[in-house]
Image (cartoon, rainbow, N blue to C red; front, side, top):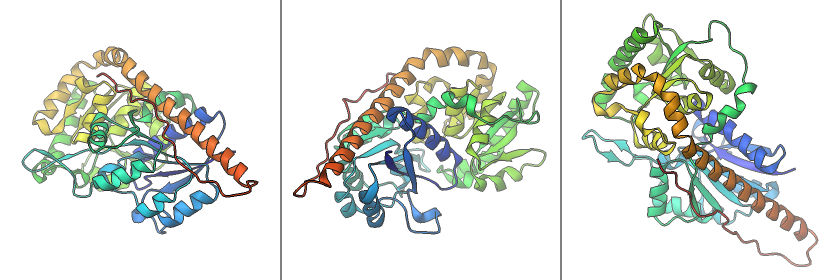
Length: 385
């Protein structure tokens, strides 16, 4: 059996769990068997123990018995929530793939896109890539930045949640009360990296969106929380139901059976696309905007910072019957991205099995073998959106 360490965000956001489910499925498909996956939090910031990231202790453990390492998916380049020791990275022996990671800028108070204050520095990005056999960027903005600072072996692969349609039949059933609901997927504005004046307007925007949704569907939307830190914000709206589940399978089932989802959260929008659930996505930073553009749906995206987001959402609601056609027209873009991700996993499998074979031979070798890393990622395939 193959054993792989997966270093990825745990934290509070259930979208990270959706990414991990899709990643696991692609990993098992590539290897043709269930892979032993040791899930390690990317940072100890949200954990009660220090076993996290690519720290010396974790890298030592990986070298002891793992056949490979995957870092991702998530926003680890953007928020630097990856505990990492560059000296330990130099001692890493199994092949490592960086998968579906993103780095995006945010709007400052002047309305300009700027780096976050906690962004992973470029020298650490380069060190991480030098230790990796392959890097699968989640969106075009991330891909462009990595190439601009000299990172090699980078491909554009998108987010694996575009493949969640494959899991639709394996999701749990929903109750009659939850079947066909209309959802408004929110985020607590205190957690949104937008200017303070824009944060102050989010409450009004949510109320106006809810009114527009009810006018067009006849149903008051239920507020969907991705993170328990969203609950205080959701609970502050009298007369509105809100829903939160820490179970990613029930979360996905709710999206699958929804009548409509209007969402501030990327990882409600992409699963809805995968399930064929009508949705309208609202982005408020470069990461989300670039991710939607990368999967071919920039025409359907709504920019919260444009100043006319509510009116644009109203227009999208009036033309929801156009979404299936648009999704089908842009399917080749997502098919290309899926091909890139599948190819990356296949090449990772080859490197992992080569390492395992080499390690087996080393047990009987008369002298130590020098372990080297070989980059195997193919020429980047970038989607035309």
